[in-house]
Image (cartoon, rainbow, N blue to C red):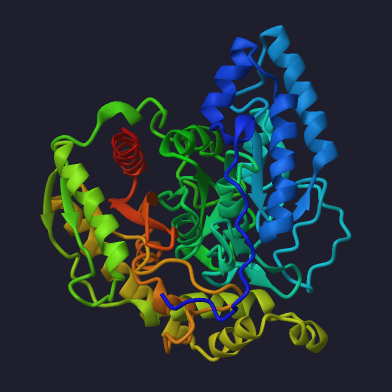
Length: 474
């Protein structure tokens, strides 16, 4: 990808150390043994949250006082040997798209008033509370999560932890930056076209877009059944832990899948031996992939083969669904903003305003034609996964580019979908897909490899990612 246009680069923050560097699983082990407490861990990650805010603008709000109160309660429960749930005392951040009781959810837009009452949690946030999580604060998003980078008129741009002059990606960029910088080991993001996977790849963390409906959503997204809620974490084990918490049913989501079929953590250890893996390096030559990205992804594919998977180069061989995706995406954006006043429209992200105007011009027949393409693509991928357990691709064709841009400088592209060809198709099909950190380019910018499985095979994606990360760490 081209270099950022700015010549002055702020220094990246130091990597987290001490308690802020621990995974959620490691924190829980420490709490159980008495080695340290939730209060100590929360103080450590709050320091990192303040650093993340100063250096890359990862937060809309840091709730330090509330977090310490929750941590003190968790510490007392651990002292009694009575933890409240699977995440008792673990610091978690939440993307500012999801409702969180007691504070505003502004979605990066000046059109939303801070004044409440804010009385409801989104389903996944409600599950966090039930399991004793410490809620650190809300992370940044582009306006209504509309694009693959994180900047908004209301909250500014979020930089990359590895080079703050570059983007963190989006739309869950604040969450990815927070996890990468040790500002809480777990975060909840949303993904309508790659929005947990894109920033995970750019920031060097793990993220899973679960099968649609596996994590309940409320209120329903303006982008309909393209939008998923998913975990953003340091590794697959933490993601499995978070999935065991947030996948509980919620009556407010009519499209939920109901209880998960079992514990995702218990399914991590199966490895990849015998799995049939299709490796598509560039979607049949359709995508130009940076050589450093291609090499890092290839190493991951070779490692899967060394671990016993049956790997062959095979493309899913479908036409690029970008135009039907735009019909669904842009019309959703138009719907969420249709009641805006002229004054509110004047303060919108200009790119969002453009796609809203385009989306408002589509007909019902245009929309239904896009749905037809979507259904055909779903059937196609269903047949593909009768032959292959996993599809492996790069998460993105390049590494992070200059901050404050929708597309890489000099690319000739106009919309964010132009540089995310590997992610949005699997929102169309509702399949589980994860971005797994797999290396870096010559500038030290992270690279992600994407693992995709058939619908409902979330456990398989997590298991394969866990095996790959464990082997990489050896």
